[in-house]
Structures are given as structure tokens and as C-alpha cells.
Length: 328
Image 1: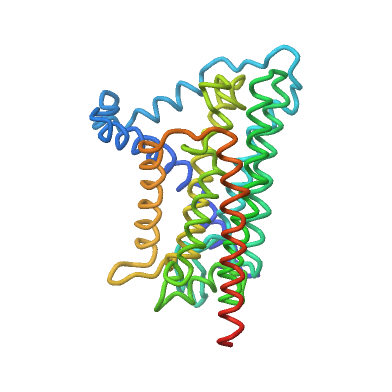
Image 2: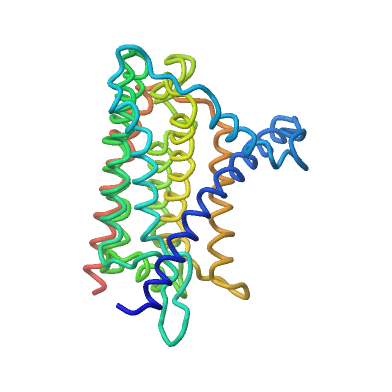
């Protein structure tokens, strides 16, 4: 393993890490501004030009706030739990390609941290582990509302990850590969959103539920659970949960772009630019949903996952397998 490869790998890790750490404050600012305009408000505007520094000010405030551990809480688990969703989100981002290979010093460098031939399985495995941070955080708080929020999140994960995984299997059956880079390359002439539109709809609905975003944010329903699983968390522990939510939004959007929307493919502009444009549109879609739909009841959420999305994903997979088998 030569020095060029090691340096390139280190640079890619730092780029992805920096992109998430700098991108989350921008996404939060964008969310506040977009929802403000949708609700005929102006959103943040006082801290920095157009309020751009508002989320940075919020981060500084959280850094210096008192870090409280409730009496009776499991101190070790309470401290470790917020870091788990952040770690799993970064592990999932490691296999998402944000561009094609580039030639550097006689070496072909893929624009992703690592290209593994089981990338889809890797993502499903790592993202499913992130819910442990939420469940353990709720349990370690030694409070009923965080515990209920954590249990809700785990139930959502079980209910929606099944349909989400099956929707991705439909694309795997078409392509014959688990590598995201290979899946993207096979979309040079036709994005898979065309033959797999129903799989995409199922995937994105499940992704919204897994990231606990409105209208599926039942794990932190303030009308029922105060703030849900993170009720007892303050300072940087709360900030880590906040960071994990938006990092996981990037993961879900990055997978959707790579599997259904051609990844980095696009005319005229550089591949990385196309990936960023598509990512921005998906993140805007997240915000649009939050500003548009009311929160579902928990029984409605669970019924929708088990009675609608799971049978629909199985039906789509069956049809895909039949078509592929008959045309092979």
C-alpha cells in the first residue's frame, strides 16, 4: 500500500467528516429559513447576514451549557449513548460514492472513502445499529418519557427497515451487485427511478421513518413525550443526537441518489457537483415534508409500515424478479 493511496484515503475521510460537520449547521439554517417562508415568516436573520451564523451560535451555546446527568441514571451508558448514532452514520457515509474515479499521480482514486462489494449490506447493518444509541439513551435516563421514546424508535426501526431493505433488494436483483459504485455506473443511460419508481417511494418513506423525521417523528413527539428519548440530555450530548439526525438524513438521501437517481451522473457539470445538487434537493424534500404534513398517530405509523409498505415491497420484489427472470 503506497503513500499516495494512504494520503488519498486520509483526505477523503477528512473531506466527508468536514462536509458533515459543516453541512449540518447549513441544513439547520436552511430548514429554519424554508419553513419560515412556507409559514409566511422570515426565519433567523439577526445573527450574521441572513441569520447564517445562528446555528453556529446555537452550537457554541450548547458547548458551554451545563452538562446534567439525572439522579438514578446509568452514567456510563448515558454518556456513551449519544455517540452511537453519530458513529454509525459516519460508517454508512464511508461507502456512498460522491463522484467517479479520478487520476492522481498515476493512481485511480475512487471518490468515496471505500468501495466495498457489499456496500448495501454494510449500510443496512450500520444504520440499524444506530437505534441502539436512541434506545440506550432513553433507558439510561431512568425516566418514563425517554424510555417510551426509545422503545418507539426501536419499534419504528424494526417495522420500516424490513420494507426498506426489500425495496433495495429489487434494485440488487436488477443489477446483480451490492456495490453502490457499480449500481451507479449501471445508471449512465437510465436512472433506476424509472423501472423502480415504486421501490423508490417505499424506500424514501421508510427512510423518513427511520430518521425519526416529521411526519414520522413519534420517538420525540413533544405533545406526548415532552421531547422523547432525548428529554434528559443537555449540552453536547443533545448536540450529538441533533448531529446524528441530520447526518442520517444525508445517509438516506445519499443512498437514494446512488440507487435510484444515477448518483454522480448528469450532463455538463462535474460529477461531484451533480451529487451535491441532488443531495440538496433531497434535503429540501425532507424540510418540505416537515412543513406540510401533521404528525401521524403511533398506531397509524405502525399499521402503515406493516400493512402497506411491507406487502407493497414484497409485491414489487416479486414482480421485479419475474421480469428479470423472464428477460434474462
